[in-house]
Length: 220
Image (cartoon, rainbow, N blue to C red):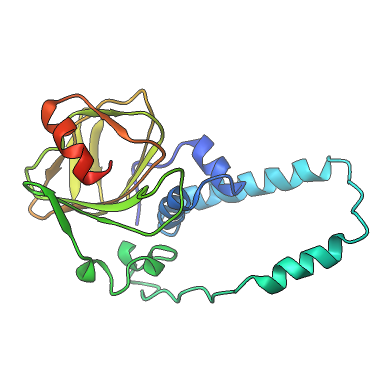
């Protein structure tokens, strides 16, 4: 699967360094499963980080450092990585690791909560800067989200369908990486609904009365 829109270099670098919260990490990691260009970029950032570590002067460990490490490791419960449900030649975004761990039964089993005419969501259990930062959003064909900007970072990965806004047209597999400088009002296009995986680091700033009215109900 090829994508026209990718995360910013700074976002990929933060992902490679392990500096993203869980919610944004899930979005980027899912995109990377299907984007060879971004996988290569992430590997390059990891290699660069390794080179930087080689230049750091080693620090002496305390006498009980190893013992404390094993105590913490023994107290942690390890969970096996969920197996991907896709075949190698039949990639589905909703079946990708790590997203499959959050979508028990796939997209078809998602319990959607209507929040406005033509708009529904499902909040996923992931840690981030605030509760509910990772969610699925489903927009019916022709429906437009109220115009808004962002108080922080927003990562949007299109799982199904497409949308258009002031910034362009985005389709399945695209990752839209926005910040406070972007103002837009996405409208779902095509015959089917647009389903997006969204991670936000701060509440959106809606520009319209409708957007401000529904914000308490959608949590975006």
